[in-house]
Length: 155
Ligand SMILES: [Zn+2]
Image (cartoon, rainbow, N blue to C red):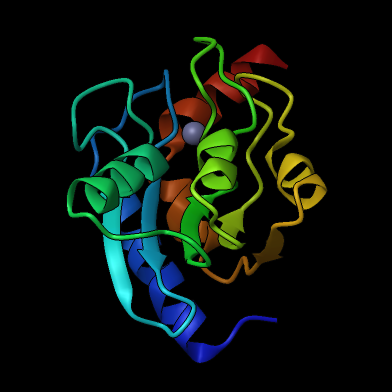
């Protein structure tokens, strides 16, 4: 179960996800990283640093650039972090594990639009605590109408 503080950070992640450019070729995701004591460390959203960098990568990069340690931190994301990528680049789950992030809270399961999602499974296998709260799912879906259309078209 997630706390009220968790919910506030998740809500911010969902709001950030609505700020990025909307395309049909990628999800619009927002991300917040906080210490396990509930202090915000960094934020990011898809497209914030140009194309190709996922929200989680942006937030991790910002934290590293500022010298902040992410060990034992909590990552909040509007969509389940990716376990693999069509581009073959390092996935967000791999970055999360490498940085020592110990808990992930997200809103929407990654829809099977681009690849069969395996992010949560990989996180749990690595010992990361994973919590989902989908109360804000309608807002996440609104920010991702493009990829959702792709999904419907592909069925
Ligand atoms: Zn990703």
